[in-house]
Length: 226
Image (tube, rainbow, N blue to C red; front, side, top):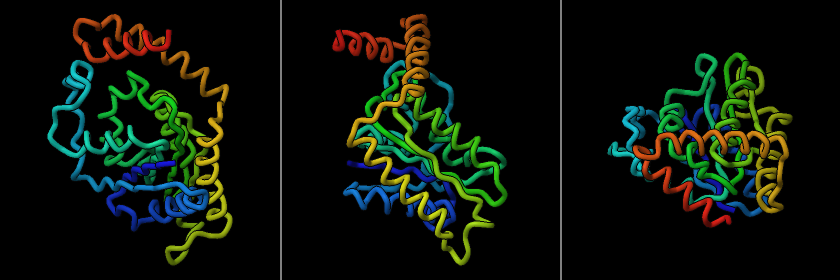
């Protein structure tokens, strides 16, 4: 299994989020996963301009690292999204990446992939961010199988996690690989995806003369499934 982790922290892999992510990846690697981590420190992904070029042509025209990162995500079997809690949300670095993923969401292009989310904070409130990231994965077509979070001010010391958090993270990494290996299906995820799929089909049909790439994508996808 090939796993790509995107970590939206200005500290890259050296900060608290990186510490927690490493424990997750240890679990995945223990079952043979090939893991690559992509840090977003703030200078690699520009904010979305709302130009709709991705809907029309399938890719973004901005000259940064987004398309190369997207290609790695599309080639992977699993996706981990990791972020610190910055004022009750994902970091600006990760949000810039997610905002650029409109065509992935509209086309549910991560279908067949599995994922999980990792969040750290200095003072709590991690769960709503886990839920937000896992909802992104669901609407993008992937199946999120877990979420790992930690209030680092109380669960880490000298750059080391306490044993309980480390164990949870390690198990989550293994869970990701096992879900992909067994092609695990989750009924609640599939119900949300069914509703999102209908919404996207209706939306893109309405915009078919402008959003040419996405309209053709769904037409071809439906034809291949029939």
